[in-house]
Length: 402
Image (cartoon, one colour):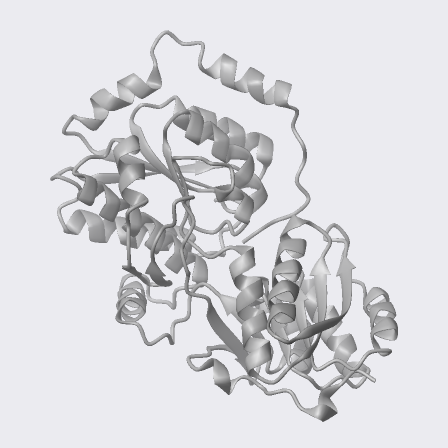
């Protein structure tokens, strides 16, 4: 899940944070080695905007994974402890949290942060401290493009989503495509990956338009876009914006007579997309990291365990959190050590780990190789897992945008 609206902090400010935090007499890395060889509880930190996002079930997913790990003997007989750290969804605060965790020798790994722009900004601090970081929800490909040795991404990237949605659109007979995206790195990555895949496989992006992610959804803006788009025959539209902007665009598309399929990103999983889009978003298909209706045994086991433990259905963040902690524990057990450097080296060798969100295999950069991109469809005003992507609406000659 990527974000926007981030602030730039100068290299001098970051250097000041690092120097000030490291001015102590003890080297946290050496002290961490001593703690790693001990017998006490193994501390895993979870950095997240806990106070700001109480509606998400991410914490419950982490808690369930922790309970399962401890019930299975922990790691080398040592129980695991989850330490929650609130980063406020803010770059400055996240960097301070990251440095505090890097300086705490009790912490053996970190799972976090929420939005990509926050995680990317903090990742270098963890890597410099040789502290393993597993990001469960950040989708920016920039996170694993820096050559870090201790940073991992346990979910798909924006590039994976763009390609998967283009592949699905083409499979449904859609060849003349339009893209509506956020004017930030997140939106551009999605839009470019979609277009590049489509063009390479006999498709054509005949129209593109963008929206400022910092502005409220604007019906007038959507109308202006559609005025331009009516010059082109369009089979299907890819929505790569916030759910609010996507909903406004969907309403305008339908108002002006467009009847072709709508495809989108995991941002459309927000209930507000249906509430604000109404009948206009019926049939929309979008990417998601987790599908409760997926046929995999791991997804079914997780869903049932979550229901029994918390009395409700898991959301996508719950599944992502569960997988991140589960694969981290798997690596610790395989490494026979909780020392971050050993765990990071083992994570790079993980192959075909059966997660609730799909099979996890890490590539040399720390991202996922050939990750699972599940799909969800909106039917009768609610979300339903699309077990068979071919069940999505097909393109017809009558769909177009003229």
